[in-house]
Image (cartoon, rainbow, N blue to C red; front, top):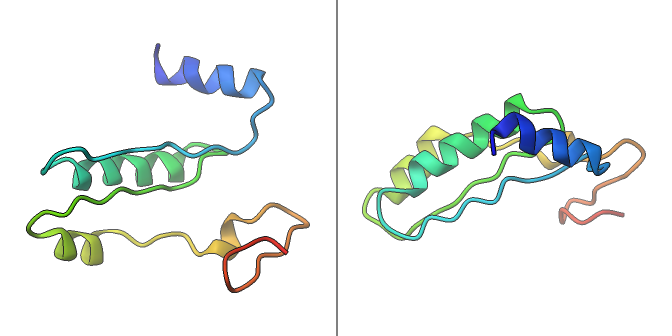
Length: 89
């Protein structure tokens, strides 16, 4: 099923916010999966940015230098306050 159709199904079901769940199950996957998930979350209304990690050589470098996550306060729903712990108040 094409991405546009999957997004249409979510909207038809009334889903307002969702997260693409990515899982790196072997070396060499985490970096490109995270890049895709971050891009998807930034370009698709209602999607949040997600990431994955795999314990492989170089993980620290690509994790620290390639992505800037959206601060929690920008992801909260209108009328919902988020505590510094990241939990909804």
